[in-house]
Image 1 (tube, rainbow, N blue to C red):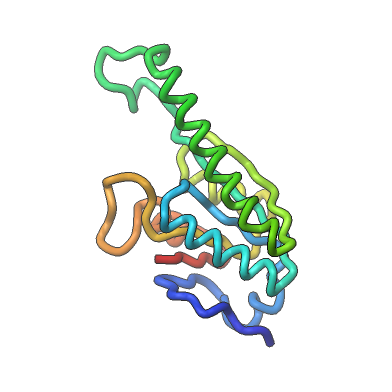
Image 2: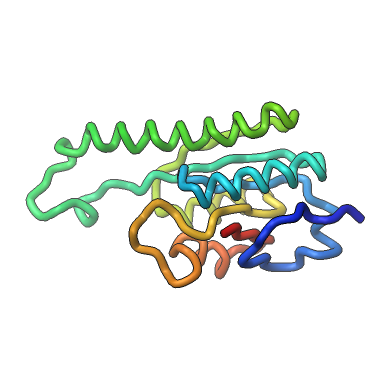
Length: 166
């Protein structure tokens, strides 16, 4: 049996040892471009190299709606920031692709819009992902004690293994 790379892991959820680690075929790397997600991407690529797994990298842009906008603001006022957010997402995905290239690991990317935790969980289910790899904290200033709200929600609701990297 192959061993996991030497990495600090906050949480490794589900049936990771034994059964899963012999059958890793699809890895989902959730990225937001933060330092935590970059570390997670590196570990996800390492896992893919060890197990010969297919890698999917996902970045989720939060959907702009009247509920998330300041009072009196119109969606047209947010065209430029939305394009900036999209560009940042594309850069985060490109970073994961570039990590995989020298390792010989191809990375399929998806730029999604919606609730980050829900989109990650839906993508994992639809693509029959074996393990989700993500950072413990994202780019938001609203951090929880040990991990961000997105990683916490994914960890609680995932029907597959989740590796959260600090």
